[in-house]
Image (cartoon, rainbow, N blue to C red):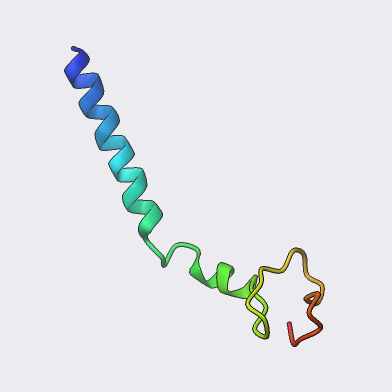
Length: 54
C-alpha cells in the first residue's frame, strides 16, 4: 500500500515537472514583462527604471 502511494506521488511530481518545463505555457507573458533595453523584469505597466523603451 505504501509503495502505491509513493509511486503515485512520484508520478504526480514528474507530471508537474514536465508541465513546468513547457515553455509555451507562459512564455509570451514572460517576454512582455522584461524590459527590451536592459532585460530586467518590470513590475506593473509603467516604464522601466532604466529609462529605456519599455
